[in-house]
Image (cartoon, rainbow, N blue to C red; front, top):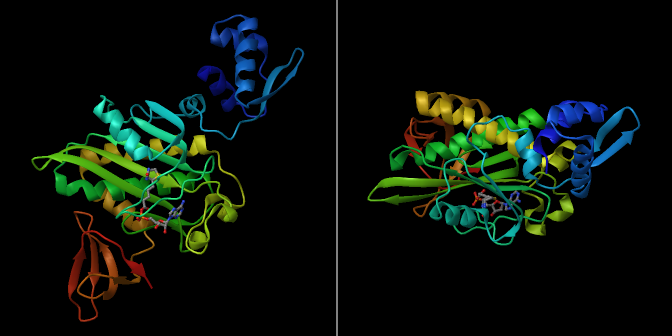
Amino acid sequence: MNEQLLKLFRERPEQYISGEELSRTLNCSRTAVWKHIQALRGHGYEFESASRRGYRLVRMPDRLNSAAILSGLRTNIMGRRLHIFDSVESTQTTAQRLVAEGAGEGTLVLAEQQTIGRGRMGRSWHSPEGKGVWMSLVLFPQIPLPFTPQLTLLTAVAVCRAIRRLVSVNVGIKWPNDLLIEGKKVCGILLESKAEDERLLYIVAGIGISANLSAGDYPEHLQNIATSLLIESGRAVDRNRLVGETMAQFEDLYGLYRQEGFEPIRLLWEALSVTLGRSVRIPSKEGSLTGTAQGIDEMGALVVRLPDGEIRKIYSGDIVMQ
Ligand code: BT5
């Protein structure tokens, strides 16, 4: 499919572009332009055509599509190598297999549906067909192993900023890996890494954004705790754009992280957090603790102040906001 052609139409939404201009810009014949348009129509793009005025893009398909993503992508590395599947068990598993086969930094795996989408600690991630952004990004960060939680927080900031740019919803970050709207979960992040002799080899950052699920797309046990961008904003989001925007935000933040370390990411995270200042309960085997979330430290741990003034740091696990 012709990426350059799509780019032209996306830059001028709703406008007619003449066949002559298209053939000039693409450096091909008018017949070839027509064939490209037909190919796009075959993929669900709708064009109006009018004699002498040319073609006008009136509707884009609601499918994940590499030309649609790449034609709007502002990154150099992240998402430049794309693998889109109709259905996989988990994009995490597929991405890990691709790494074993030599995939490089920034490789992105997307699927319309996951049959065994996973969360943390053996939990499952509900990934119905055609409704979400279920994706995994391959990274080879040059960081010590204990720093990997920082990348979970960086990923959360990237997705939060991307959503805020495209959808008017009040989305915020709950430590460590959830994005919430009005207290309900709209996105989860799962970082899986491989290390050898305490040395980090690679990370696969899994991102699940519940974009266009309706209430009925959720099983009953999730209906009160999960939501979607569609449910909250009343509008379907263009998933291809959301993928591109997330990659752009990620690449910016990742560059910043490499140059200046975690501190600027920590500040951005704190600004988007819905956890700070709140009373939180930390369940543990020894009985749960309750305190006030104060911030995150230089490693990404949550800093909690207990009622007696003692400061505790929480490095992993779950918290319950009260
Ligand atoms: C997470 O785990 O939040 C990480 C989810 C990562 C999913 C992505 S999708 C692409 C990639 N491939 C994968 O196989 N996984 C990653 P956790 O913090 O354990 O939260 C899991 C909990 O979130 C579940 O127990 C449900 O309560 C809730 N949940 C499940 N599906 C959801 C959905 N579609 N939208 C909102 N909440 C959901």
